[in-house]
Image (cartoon, rainbow, N blue to C red; front, side, top):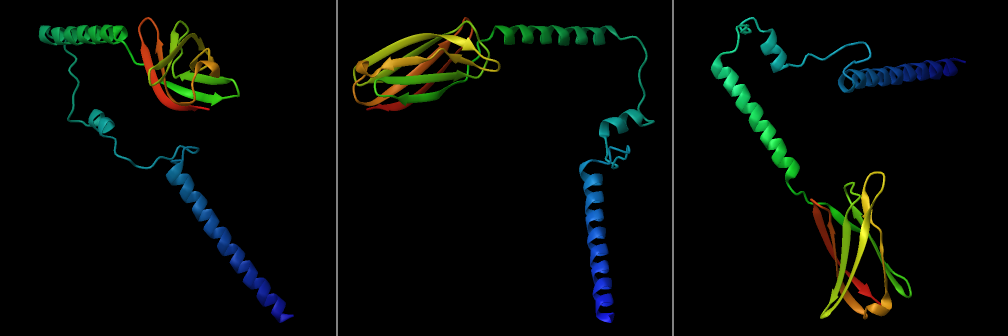
Length: 186
């Protein structure tokens, strides 16, 4: 009977120790990872902006702005507006990539992704091998989050066997993008 009681006490002590370790780990995780946000606890972290606002040595000038200050504000506003206008009229590059290039018995399928939403664009596909060139065009198509070319299905009868350079150029009224790869036609 005594043997059972000793192992029972030993199991109870081990269980309590495990519970204590798990509780301490959970509390540490809560405090350091969650910042104690459920109860509004926050770790004391220095905030230089808040410290400078609260500091009694800093004062706020409530006097009306001087002509020099007004001119500086006006100049900054004009520069910001001009910068925004320049950025809106600048041509940006589209990110274009190949999603599929595969060959069935009689067709080479090429699919393109464009990492922006565009609806009025043109895709030009050019395949080159030595002096042979095959060119196809398609319109762009906007999906929910990206755009794509409407797809290219090139009959293999137009292509000789071997390695071809595949270029695609996507253009809109104000943007363009290009991607290139190699593919083997069997």
